[in-house]
Length: 161
Image (cartoon, rainbow, N blue to C red; front, top):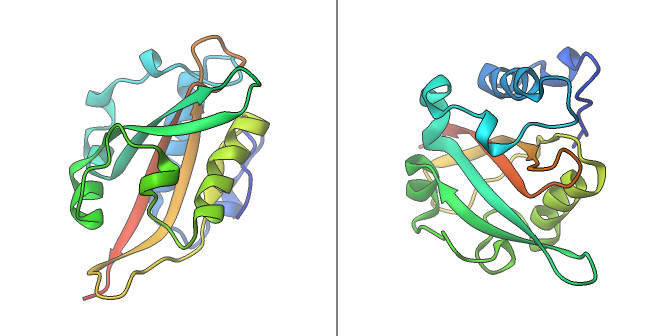
């Protein structure tokens, strides 16, 4: 599970993975406009329309001690179909989709702590599912350019049945 560098060449990391992961990473990089990370308002859904069904927006909320919590804001239609539910408004800790809670929260926390994108290339398939989670890219967003207040997640799925 590699941490991606926003300012370095990452081509080797994406080798063998679906091209849409690299395309979204490059889109995110372009929207930074010289900043550490873009804001949500920098993203134009019409520019990434084909990726929307497999995208997730997660709000990052901080308590008074600065500890991050993660809440689903928006899920694409394919994400909802694969999960069998729409967890919008729920905490990720209460409605996660992945191998373990520790794995899922670790991906989000890594993005918050390092303020860098994260590629989770661990394969995940639930018993009976028709689609396997081949890889996920977690892209930080910030309203102030310093603190992550939202994370854009894109999942590349592969049909297995």
